[in-house]
Length: 209
Figure 1 (cartoon, helix red, strand yellow):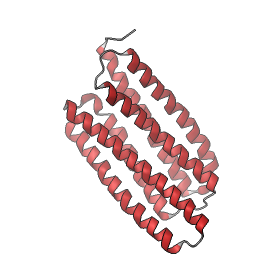
Figure 2 (cartoon, rainbow, N blue to C red):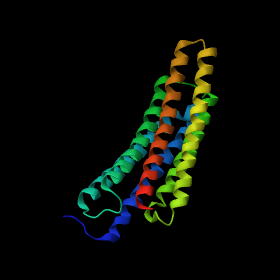
Figure 3 (spheres, rainbow, N blue to C red):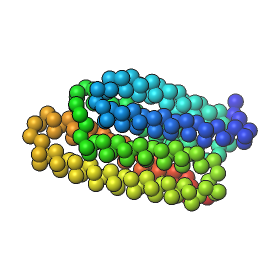
Figure 4 (cartoon, one colour):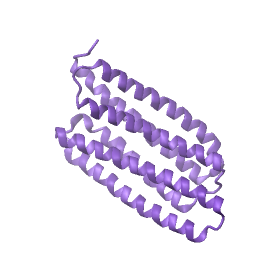
């Protein structure tokens, strides 16, 4: 049956926060591997557990969406935010699995820096989603956060291009080059994904503020 009780609508925002926290936790696992590649096998097991939990949260959001007649924001926005956060965890899982498969060894400086940007970007997403239940009140703070994530994405682009250029100029082993090119692209794509999430949140703010 459809629910018509407005008080339950806050559950969407609570679930968003929980999902975003899993995304953030995944970046911390990535950072641990960047600091010590010998932890990769263990951290893949941990990201697999996080991904499973994130899937459950995503399922809970979709189930609630199907059972709720009146939603606090547009249904398509709820669906997009839920799937976007879940996809972020999936991306991190794939990257950590690739690190194990490639047996990359010690991380390159550019990959470490991109991971730090991911940590900061996902932390900002958690913060933004924690304010989304009071959009009008938090409009300025929400827009400041989304703009910060945009700036972080631009910084990540610069690091990615610089590191990629270094790889092609100085790394002579083609296997090593391919390994790190793929991993850098994974990290940069995930930072881009954070920007897309920020743009989605910004769009919601502009609708309801």
